[in-house]
Amino acid sequence: GAGVSQSPSNKVTEKGKDVELRCDPISGHTALYWYRQSLGQGLEFLIYFQGNSAPDKSGLPSDRFSAERTGGSVSTLTIQRTQQEDSAVYLCASSPGQARNEQFFGPGTRLTVL
Amino acid sequence: GDSVTQMEGPVTLSEEAFLTINCTYTATGYPSLFWYVQYPGEGLQLLLKATKADDKGSNKGFEATYRKETTSFHLEKGSVQVSDSAVYFCALRNTGFQKLVFGTGTRLLVSP
Image 1: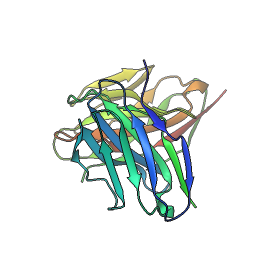
Image 2: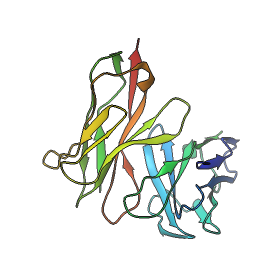
Image 3: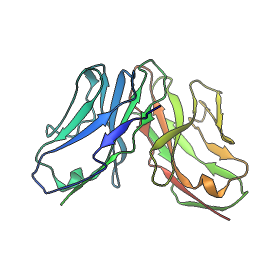
Image 4: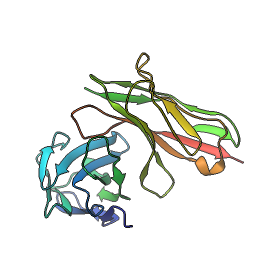
């Protein structure tokens, strides 16, 4: 079956522009996660969705970052007024939603802010 | 807060050598522990996991044992192959939380 998909695979933007990153989780997975992988910070958690609500937003680095999930499926991560330090690979993962279940990761979106 | 520490890489081995990648953790409570692998050009994949003390996770010839007394979850393989070349991440998920906390990753390079 289809895995987690993310789009675009690569995004180059100019400092100060807004960007939207999309994640399509595995069908039926109720839990969705965003992580960021960067050279300086390693792999960091950003936000967790259960259904359409986000009980844990503790990893969002600033109020320029926001995310939403609609219909319990697709999620969009939005970064406003991008900065060079936002350059990273943004990873999305999904899981069936029950405790201790494996998180399945997508291929990531590589964001470069010039 | 919770954290995971992994040995620095890269780890360079010849084919059929024994592999150990060290991982230690700091966490309150009783976390579940994981090893994820990222092959070149691919996404993160779960390699193995252990959910309580003394559990041994195993997959594809890799093993790791959850040692609460030493707060460790070292990854081992008896005979590595060139195809094992990848970046390996140790991670934990603490009780009551859904997020994974990752180590910095260890790159493994296996030569023929």
